Image (tube, rainbow, N blue to C red):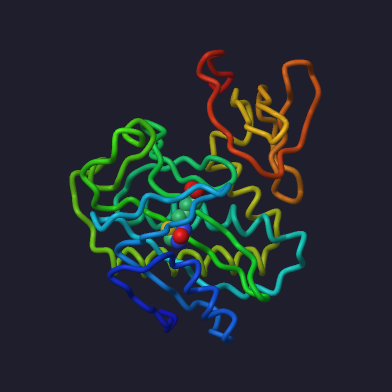
Length: 250
Ligand code: BTN
């Protein structure tokens, strides 16, 4: 297995900020900052990431994939595939992937992991928040989040899981480098129920858009066929199931 530098913290503000410092100082690809608690965990779209010391795994891996800038969004998809693989390997739990980067428990669509990708000083910071041994969540997250122990009844060792996830991240970023974007798009399309035929609401800056998902673009963005027939490309934003309208997914 590849030797990686792992900096473990019992508690830290955010592993993203510490990894950014290390990346600027020239830390090699694969370097990881991991924590058992974050006091200022960052989520996507400017949200915070609930990170108490109750069994979650929070880490950021520094990547230096040397990819053309237009392939960077696909890295996020590769990270989702990697985290889902590590979970499946460890627990056997089937996962779904919600574009661009939520790893869900396939059985109940609750979130097991979230991914935050940032570009910093020539490096990519892959931030992963994985719900491992938490036995409960605060009221506001209870219906949308779950953990490996809740779903399987078995606790997992955070350090083993970290190594499995880091290895899977390296495998999938290698696949991207060697086999190209199409390989990742194909794998993501095969593993995600959200890529096509799924009735969703997308929260865009100009307001919510409703429609049915209709595939990925060659850059890894999601296309949505709106109810008026217009096809739009989603480059950022939160995608959620449109439960009021039912589902177009078989
Ligand atoms: C999301 O909003 O779904 C992405 C959440 C990413 C959270 C992880 S936890 C480790 C790393 N450090 C942070 O502050 N955020 C990411």
